Amino acid sequence: MEQRLPLPPFTAETAALKVQLAEDAWNTQDPERVAKAYTVDTEWRNRNLFINGRDEVVAFLTEKWRKELSYKLKKELWAFTDNRIAVRFEYEYHNAAGQWFRAYGNENWEFDENGLMQKRYASINDLEITEGERRL
Image (cartoon, one colour):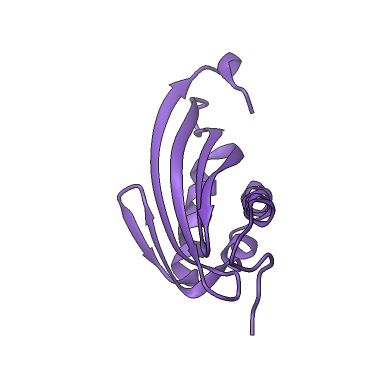
């Protein structure tokens, strides 16, 4: 049985750790590594996309990081209860043409008893920035 520590129910300390572990994994830009934190049948809403299962997560992240270059993410714990965590985040990247962006968003996460994320709902907005406006 797969487990991904820390397990729910979350405390302030374990929820913050879960958020930091997610940030660290996403910053590797390794779709296979990131996907292992999700249930095999995970359900996502990412902007206007609906993604189901680890295979679709890997495909989505592979394409994302092919287009979003020099990707750097920062997540912050917003709230938690039992097996759910809410985060706010921002990340920066540039496209192939060199245009920089900062994306802002919120995510709602739901975990199974083994600490794997079974649901992820993300709302995200992008803002064009100059390279000099980068913070991350």
